[in-house]
Amino acid sequence: MYAKIQDNQVAKFPYTVQDLRDDNPDTGFGKDIPDEMWGRFGAVRVIVTGQPEHNPLTQKVIESTPAYISERDRWEQQWQIVSLDAEEIAAIEASMRNDNAARAKQALLDTDWCENPSVCNTSFTPHLTNGDDYDAYRLILRAIVVNEPAVVETWPARPNSVWSS
Image 1 (cartoon, rainbow, N blue to C red):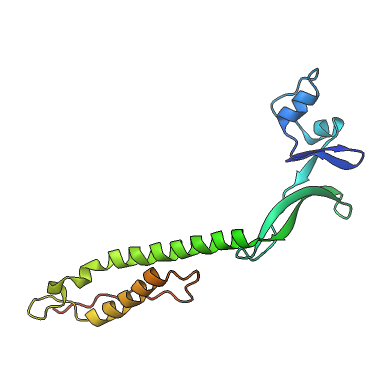
Image 2 (image 1 turned 135 degrees about the vertical axis):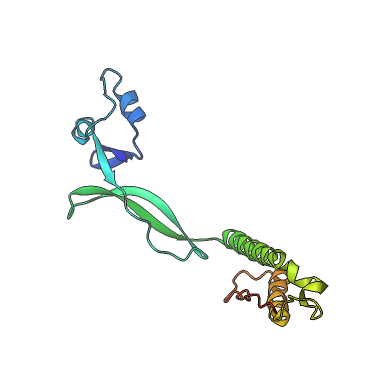
């Protein structure tokens, strides 16, 4: 990643190979352009840095203009943490509610088989001996589907099937 520097300021970022060629039409550039060649044309390599930690429910990270870090003698990518507005927060919460409801619906579909009357019927062998565990599990899942919470503190653990022999 490169930036075009003019008067010790970032004039353009990102500055691409195509930008370099467009700005210097009389110069032939090979496929791989070394950093020193970029430097001859006023461009510098920008060191990619990781985004800072933030709360994705209330904040977002925006890339800002690269900065020269004198202690490291290099240009580095910079980030800014910005608070989300009410509309963005509402959209995130709606997405989380939808995701939780969809996950709960899928878990219900995955355990629909345990609701078949013959599965827990003791006159059949084998039969499910812990049907009550599945009933409790599915009750919690149905509450998530109906209430659509944005956050589910603890997802219920799916019971292991215990069959009579």
